[in-house]
Length: 494
Ligand code: AMP
Ligand code: ZN
Image (cartoon, rainbow, N blue to C red; front, side, top):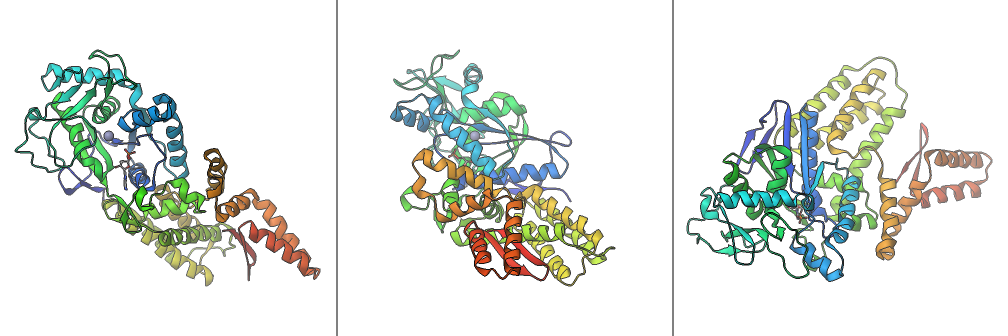
């Protein structure tokens, strides 16, 4: 089986076919770098990350481009408010975006910045003017004449039959029902960043940025374009209008949209107090791997309701996977192989692939790996896993982690970064006890922990219970959980 994917353009699940054999050219709308990214933004970015990971796992060569919107209405307003240049203002949040993306396990796409493509954008407008598709207004702004693009509305399935030719809208994000000529290029206003170009001074509109940069990077027609569901209209509709009216060709073949994240059942908003950046959650002591796991646990087109209970369950799930891998890599196994374990590993790999081929059904893929862990753990307890079963079981975990990226434990250093960042933004009081503990535990190396555990055992053997209790308390305070099992003392980080 091969990938089948929902295409917003056809409103159907289709066979995913690329224009060039073995190669996917894809583009996702990236962040507007005017603030720290929230977990809703990261639901969308992670969904596209998983898609590109799965395409690569399926054998495609993937060219994946994402833009950084580093000039727009909000950025200009905030930079002016703070009395700094646009570049100075956006540099901080672009850096934060890159750090957060790495923290949440996103593989870096090729990133392109709007401010580095201004001249190409002006050229693009010039060509639209030459075709009489764009027009200039008295103040030196340029608008797209949507009456010239009869297919307008084909992505969002809006019927703009009664639209009024020449009615205009200046802002980038607007009312869902308005079909108006939209701004391609905005004339300079006092105090705003602007550039000198072939069409005069000014700055690009948001929609134009993505059309120009995606086609420059990937060609006039490419395979897939994605983003959150709010981008269908007007952003993507406008990108299509601009690009296709210029080239006369299909702009992107597949349109991939991620459903909006809810938090505790409601739309996330600052006024409701349910608005979280990634860093807010880490400050509360949650691990990046738990956050990623939760954000991947619901297929991208279904509603995902983010709750703190869900986040705790996600942490338990990640721990189960990590503990299982630990058991496999550190256990002693009898020689030989158990056909049941061999087929379990093979079936799991096949089930995960079938799930992801089915419009990226991440929930089914997770169910498959947990079924394997449950059955293999039972076999382990009954001494029924043999030496030759270990590599295939590990391979299934590896396949899972190529997409989900939660099993390798690098939470400690990532949490330390947030811990170190907090005081630089005056947020040291938001550091929770849980985060403090996690950071302290991460600073203890495995060898140091083993040494303390050995000292504990020695103290107990010498009946010095005070010393052994003190060592145990020290490890517990650093978030190390110690368990006495029949195989000896086992420990893990909380
Ligand atoms: P922005 O930085 O606002 O331009 O948004 C960056 C990306 O995050 C876009 O693809 C948005 O569609 C997406 N996005 C914004 N809010 C949410 C949300 N609550 N859930 C999912 N995706 C979102
Ligand atoms: Zn875009």
